[in-house]
Length: 276
Image 1 (cartoon, rainbow, N blue to C red):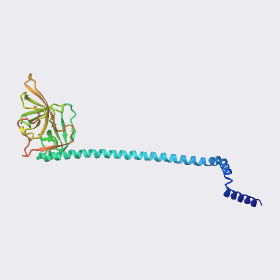
Image 2 (image 1 turned 120 degrees about the vertical axis):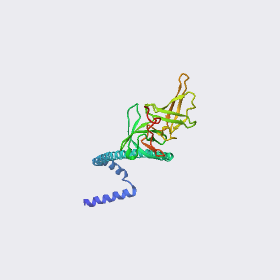
Image 3 (image 1 turned 120 degrees about the horizontal axis):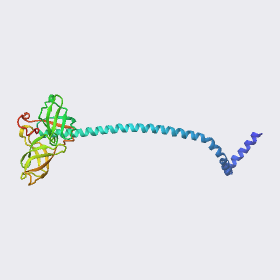
């Protein structure tokens, strides 16, 4: 009987609610009463889900961040290597172009070390007598004369740059043909012309090339540009400063040059070698 009564009441309530929507307000009141209970029951589940997602997300983010940092470091190291290879490629292409312009027999050599003496300008190359290198051989880069080999061993050789204070180089002005001797100044990346009369035909900007005198350096190689000419009537000679065209302090590769006639440096006069 109770079941029948409850069933009849339920059917009556459903019919009344379906046709007239008379139980909407009652449903709202019941939902308001039941909501705290539903929220309290569902709260632990939501908290557990949030904690799991937070811990998992933080762990995944830390792992991804660590992986990205390592990948970024590898990429940067590769980019730096590629940049160095690109710069080396440009230098070698420049040297190759220079060797084509030179027309003489040449050999590319790399720098092994640089003399740290502030008053000397010497370098060590990775080519020696086994490669045909000889004492007095000319050393150039894509822009001009760098120096000469002063000591050749079987596998390496020592070279003296033109800015070393003990080095002298016979040059001539490309514009006028005026001949002079350029010596190194040591710490400064400059050359100085010796014993130049005050009335000599020299101008700022003149290009100096090797004259070929002394048979130490082949003629016609660029040496430098005149950057200052100081004439003082109280002194017998003018002070002339020259900036080398070669990149003496920045080269990693250089060209060793054999003269076109195949001869080596003379053993006589020393106008193209070291100052005694």
